[in-house]
Length: 445
Image (cartoon, rainbow, N blue to C red; front, side):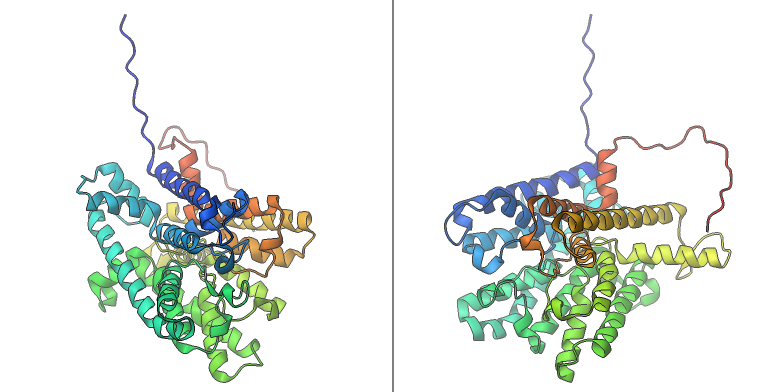
């Protein structure tokens, strides 16, 4: 009797993406736990190492120890490598290494890369990967050059160049990690609130990183021929512009009253942009009104755009849901954007993402508020920052207990890997047909 042939189990693209993110976090945790990574030469508590590694790979920026003072030079190098891998996508880095080594890129790798950067098709994915790597390095080096004069003047040549490179990568990857704690713990970029060169450079890097790799490719291909842009590119550019301008106007007119006009302009623009999952700040958020904090929470949840270094539910998700609502108001069969219809599958995915993020963000805040005996609004800000991979904080994260920090770790991982990616990775089968139940109407609203 012959033995049955065992079929080789193939992992889905979603499972591969989740695995690579988890593997990078695990490797980063071990490296940051080692004595060589701490400034004191002692082991860092494993939870603190895991929190920092997760925050770096998930390009969030929330920290439980001050980055500048707790970690050694080796630790800083580990953190910036994790940020780079997380920003570009861990699988993108792996594919780039395969390309450089001359290995053949199979269909599964191409399909996984398509899901990782949310490309519209598998075709040309290797070419797009090369473009992503070149563009990323170009923008980060340009940002480092622009930041160098200010940092060299303050820190000296070698330390200034390192600071410029570190902050350029951190800004482009929307990570929010900084090395300014040497002057004042957890100070971020508050000393540069009036510095146009630093503020505007960081702002530019955050915006570029948050637009998305596929948007870049469309802009490169079609340049200023706007009519040729994909619908997604038009949505991304229009929504990004509005989500920068409107909060900036609110901040300029209703906050920062004690600043000069120049400082208010820079601070308003910077804070409006950094809410798009960047994590830097040039003003102390503790001075902001409750109205501003309440405004920031949904903006952090929205985040950047698909296939970018940013997190959040994404600008396109918001627009699809708004378009679906307007279509319902106007009794239209399908929502329309830029003279194109949006599919029911896209609407269902958008609604699923919104519900998942809202439920996780709210109930996580509820648990942390109850456990830590902290105000609910403050906890909602922190959980929105974590799941949106923003990294902004009202200062409570370092003092949270182990259970609350584990909740934030999960939210950061969920926000960066992607809610649907994690769900699809956990489910091995997808229903593609078969019998359907009878249709019956239900009243809503």
